[in-house]
Length: 201
Image (cartoon, rainbow, N blue to C red; front, side, top):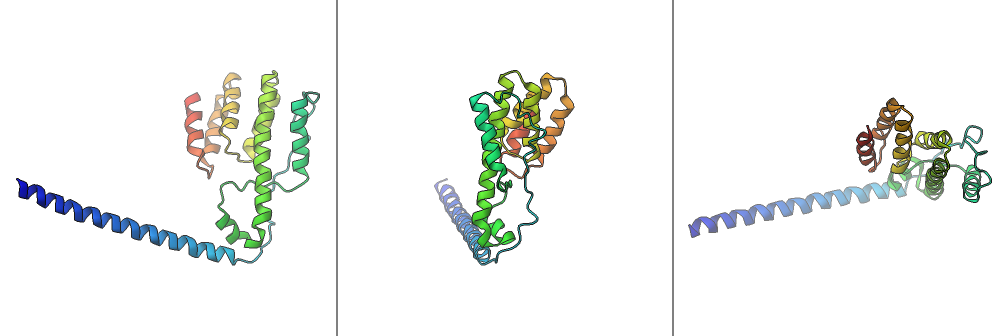
């Protein structure tokens, strides 16, 4: 019995040592691959930014005339106007390494600025929609949220709030459309959004 336990322990020890060595080797290879790719990215020359999906804020179709006298809403409006004066691009699902490989290392600063502008846009649209909804302007809140979704935001609250509006107005088929959109997000938040949306059906 003791011999059997000893043999089993030795076998387990060698198996564990093998697994740890294999894991370290895989991790090392992965790190080397990453740094090779990062080195290549850092040496990529500047490329045109013409194919970026620039976002334009549709001032003529969003409800800027509603609650315009409210101080908080006016602040949201001002933020959107300031954002519209510069390029806005949703790059949240693309790594810096991939951005440098695609557009060149010298462009990474400006691309980061475009993406930061998008982050502010997504947050501002979400806050604006909530304010409109709380004041009873549900239709207008829906319009703001629908625009946010068109920009492929991954803000969970935007999808949930819009789904709740669809649910309360008898537009269940629209929730299915939201699920399809969320499923297509190249974001770590996508699965969570889909799960929450399905829970509302």
